[in-house]
Amino acid sequence: MNTLTPGTARIHIKNLSLRTFIGINDEEIANKQDVLINVIVRYPAVSAVEINQIEHALNYRTITKELIRHVEDNRFALLERLTQELLDLVMRHPQVQYAEVEVDKPHALRFAESVSITLSAQRT
Image (tube, helix red, strand yellow):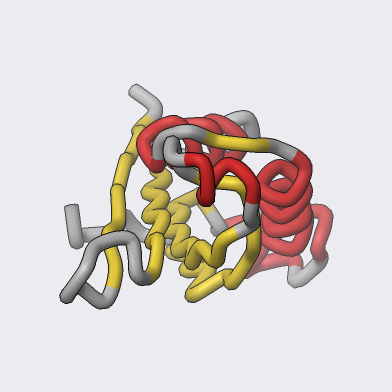
């Protein structure tokens, strides 16, 4: 899925670093942990390119604020659930043709730098 149709923009929100309650053991339930979030979004940007006004673009700042609010205001048992909820938030924007969300949980496993889950969705 690396080819883009003409006028398709690819937005990449890189390493959004947040803290939330994520996990199933007592320590994870009681203490916030770091998560890193990466999001890739594709949307038709012909109008944004031609007119050069924010009203014609997908506002990635709005999406990022929604992601931050959701992560910081909720608790999650599983990375899968958190990742799906974030993907759902991104896909609520009707301009989005394709989205991919990766949530990375640093130090989740002994001897591993991190564990991550990636989910994607596409409009048909």
